[in-house]
Amino acid sequence: MTDRAWSLRSRLTLLLCGAAIIAWIASSAWLYRNSLAETNRLFDAALVETAHAVLAVVAQEVKHHRDDEDEIELEAVDHAHAESVFYQVRSRRGEIVYRSAGAPAEPLAAAGASGFGNAQLAGGEYRVYSLQARRDRATIHVAQPVADRTRLARSTALRLLLPGLVLAAVLALGVWLIVRRVTAPVVGFAHAIDARAPGDSTPVRLQPLPAELRPVGQAVNRLFARVDEALRHERTLTADAAHELRTPLAALRAQAQVALRARNSEQRDEALRTLIGGVDRAAHVVSSVMTLARLDARQLDVAALPPVDLRELAKLVLDEFAPAAQARQIRLQHAGARTLVRGDADALAVLLRNLIDNALRHARSEVQVEVGRSGADATLRVTDDGPGLSPEKAARVFDRFYRGTADGSGAGLGLALVKRIAELHGGEAGVASPPDGGAVFEIRLPVVEAPATG
Image (cartoon, rainbow, N blue to C red; front, side):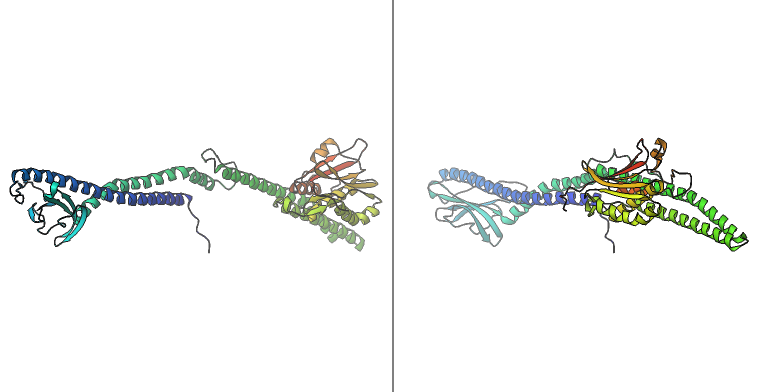
């Protein structure tokens, strides 16, 4: 079961919208609570102002009724809206001498009460403010139903929250549009890659991409370049291999025909021996092509490879070639100190074998292998005393399927393998031809900075 791919655009939209919604909910809760508290303070202030207004009227009325302080007459105010604030006027003895229209008949608070309080009456719960007149001649109770206060406070708070809700919706839409616009270059980059033809390896334009994603685009372009290089090597290798195999296959066919037409066993045996040699050469070409193809497709992490002692590796490879060198009466010389490099020992052995095999085929009497160090590089030199190389041959000696001799020996891939293996190890291969003859092949590889042990 594969994991579902996640969308950067969807995730950004959800996260930003979620953050905006959470912020709106938190701010709305704070605003709602503060709106309720502020509205209740305003209602309480209105009760206080009403009580003082009623007290002023009561004081004026008392001046006209000094003989009978319980007789207070207040004119009713005619208005169209329903009462939401009620008041009662009580005499010094605690009797209710006046109450506003709609006010409950029961006392809203105790006779001697002062300040704010709540009263639970038959008509419901009331918020009450009590004010004592001077010289305790009267007490004013001003009340408002708690249900009305709550309804009005909530209605006010919700009206304040409505613009925030609209703003949150607009913000969510804006976030979606912004994320869509910001991620459009990424989507366009993906479409540009998807729309490419199979053989198109030209770099993708990186200008639309933001700076944070340009390294990704550059990596994609580098991958295109590597794939193109690999395909080019593959196409070249296939074409060259087909060309190189055509000649030995034709020779094999010719030798087989000779064997069929042989009049005696000696002619047949000679033709078969030549046929076997041709098969060996064709097999060598195929083996070299396969090895080079594997190396072309391979990438080495040199830093993760173990250290290899080039001196010891050279000794082992020279021991393999000792019988062949002795048969040709060629001396194999070895010199150098312990030199460590990080690498694939098998691949480096192939490199050495090809260099020594090439030197043996051209040497007259001696082949020398020298291992050393030059600055930060380990050096491997294979020198022969053969006829040497002209500048034209030296320039092409590492090319694939290039043969420096006209005898048709070799597959023309040995030195190409040497160059490829050196490149895989972060090194390079070179050749020089001294004026006094011979050829010097030098391989440079990064040396391991570690103390040598005897």
